[in-house]
Length: 399
Image 1 (cartoon, one colour):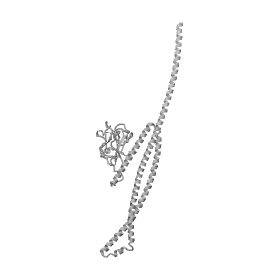
Image 2 (cartoon, one colour; image 1 turned 90 degrees about the vertical axis):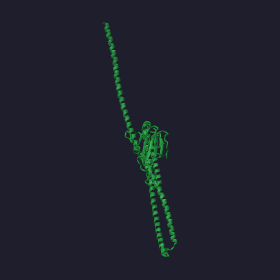
Image 3 (cartoon, one colour; image 1 turned 120 degrees about the vertical axis):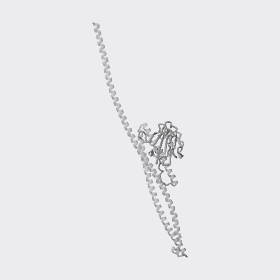
């Protein structure tokens, strides 16, 4: 009995110890669970706060991008205005040059006529009191009388005509001088506006550069590509403008006075710029997302290294080898108001040069993937005057 009682005591003590031990565990577990829940709640709060901050940053970045885009629009507007003003200044300077030439020619004509008139007056003065009546009365026969009469009549007409011509020439000179002065005033005004626009452009560019520094590195790189493309397009536009002006000068020198602008484009007559086996269009005038591509891409399998042909005879007005944008590209003036651009050629494959005449079907380079390209293909554009990025038209209307 005593042994059993002792065992009971031992069991009771063990139970008590177990209860105390597990009680502590339960208490400790409860405390840990509570701590975990609290920590979880804090984590969730931190996550939400971070997400909120990310959203704010995202919204802010979107706002900055929107501001940059607005500034880009302003820059393009100013550049277009400056371009138009430059053309206006060139035209005004040409009209001033023409007016000065016209005045010089008219002045020479006036000097000759005044000199002749002066000689006629001097001759008349030296004749003294001899009058037309004296000449007629001195005629010794009817034939002589009639001859002298018609001679006097013609001389009188000639003198009158000469005096009228002198007056008319003087009037023309005065009008030409007034036109010249008006042109000079217009020129100075255009130059002032141009300088103002350039100043405004510089200011907007500074604002844009300031905003760009707030963008992420990725966005800055993207913006850099956009700026490079805009600069290259400006270069292309200038080359096309120069070609058009040269075309106009050539037409003027050949006596063609059909107008002051280059001939209008005539759709048709273009061959495909790549071999027929590779003439599959992978991207049309619009991207799949709906954006305006302004070109067609030929990108069939195996096209890499294939020859690129001039779609029509013409003159090469620009070639370039870039590591961005169009990469290796060629632009041809077809002398019908159209210009074609071939881009992303293989490095070192361009086999024509600026100013070179090319015939339809002549190889100008090879298909590659230089510049802003994700794979071998030919980017093919057709542009019309004045040749800017916004003057790209559907190539399929010409092929």
